Length: 378
Image (tube, rainbow, N blue to C red; front, side):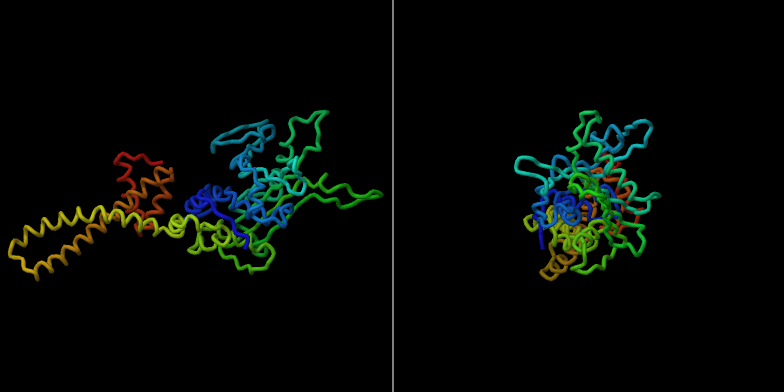
């Protein structure tokens, strides 16, 4: 298989989405990774047929990547960096691309001149938002095309227009017969009377691709058209299953980052790391406290047999106390990390319930206690 070498940034993003409960900002972060985009583009862009994922990664213009870009008239070239940024043009509702970027068109580029493809990727939770996704996609394409030229004048050179792709990845609310399908809509020369058709690149400027998933379980078979892309998207677009990193590793190689790999594979890796470090720090402290109490009670009459018995009792007590302290310290550490990363309270509570088998009330008590000690919630 055409496997990519994974970067630390992409692996970190994989970790952030490991407990994803649905389509959210973390999934969009993941789809922004060049390795992930290369897999998507290989399975959708006609101009990249026959190219490896590594080559496609090289085509992507990294400095053109933007996760939120306004497409309202007159402002399409303005990159919006704030989630709450609002611009209004002639009272029209503001719309934004999820991920807009450019990538080289190898079929038209030369050593001296690069011709680009203008691409946007739109992950969607629902295929039925109350309007046809296909119409919205065509509207986005029209805006992407018009954004390439400044205000049209008599001297505007339309030969500079470059092809645009809009790729929509729809997750839920898809008719059963359309589950795991890929639809392509593009401009075509359908009829000519008395003349031959013109060169395709002169009119082939807009292509809409709608990918429909539809179920947590993908039962496609290797060799089916679109299998590799659909299997990968099924893995990353739904709440991650136990074999998440195993499946992803078939597409992206993270073997150079083995330690982080283990952490990303399952939360227990991080938890065990914290346990080992804290147990080492706390063991001597707690053991000293317990031994001081036991020594007062036992006196100098302790025989070897009694010493052995005491040791067993001490070990049991130390183990219980260390375990309690370690668990509390783990929870505290994770809460502080999540607060620093500005993860919302609701998600933090869900993580505590999942990893430590706490009730909603218990997780809330831990959270409030940390915040009350001077750490502000996000």
